[in-house]
Length: 401
Image 1 (cartoon, rainbow, N blue to C red):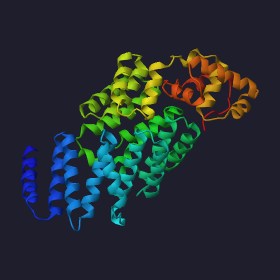
Image 2 (cartoon, helix red, strand yellow):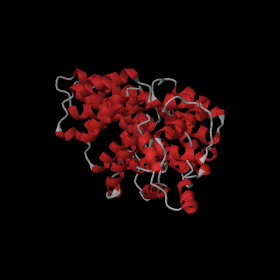
Image 3 (cartoon, rainbow, N blue to C red):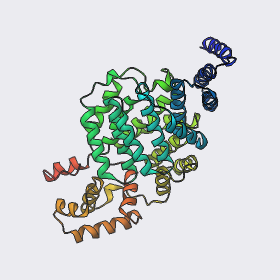
Image 4 (spheres, rainbow, N blue to C red):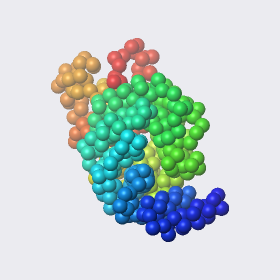
């Protein structure tokens, strides 16, 4: 491998002496990939920026090189604290002539910029960006991932009903697709589906985990060449969260710890923060929430920062200790039901439901439904609860959307 790197560097050095800026840009792109293979992410960013400098100087810039350098830089802006680079990506994105041959690149950059908006706390802009990306999706597999982008953002910002709607749409499409036909990041949709369904339907979550395990090719070739540990980090995080929600605490902790180590090694700080938060939720070890707070500090307006702050301050209340009547209200609240819908479903008066919600606010030390949803989303939900109720009491009204 080192021999191949040396050959590529020697070839790039020749191109760097070219009078044509397009050739010099191509050389910089080659050097950026060598930096990636060596794990030097900051050098990769530097070489991509230099490639874009060369293309800016070209009388007739090669738009394919430009789009590909922009795509990789946008991906890194999604992962790292690169405010200036993100601004540059947006400027070029708005001016680049996106031809039909660059559909995938345009879609990817649109989606990555939406993720940057999400981290910066611009959630409305993020929703709009993910919606635009969905319109550009080059395949149904990518379309599923776009639905899940919005489902995750909605769930994490307290929009439970919309999150459930997007998740159901994604599920209806995903179950009819052949996932062996694709080898890119779109395959990660299977893990996100497992992660989200583990919250409400364990058998479906298990099916998606099994489906992902049946795949053999590497995910995200733009990063991996089959060996990049970051790919394993992405996989381990989603699998770990799903296993926790399915009740397998030990396997979940092991996967999340593995993901934490990988993201720490690459300074993927917000992803490391998410791992630490999940590990805190299952272990209640304060060291994890302190690590999460330090790693998310550069993104103070993000929902991740809000969630970590709430987790640090919230009163921990085991769900199985809440009286059954109030727990039924919580189940329906999780499903995105309004007070009137909860009252009808449970056969109670709206006044009773309001009082029970007020009492739950006090129990969890929150002041609104949104804060309560955020605290609840930190809890590992006992997925057997409804099954136990059915065995004891017979059929119950469905509470999942």
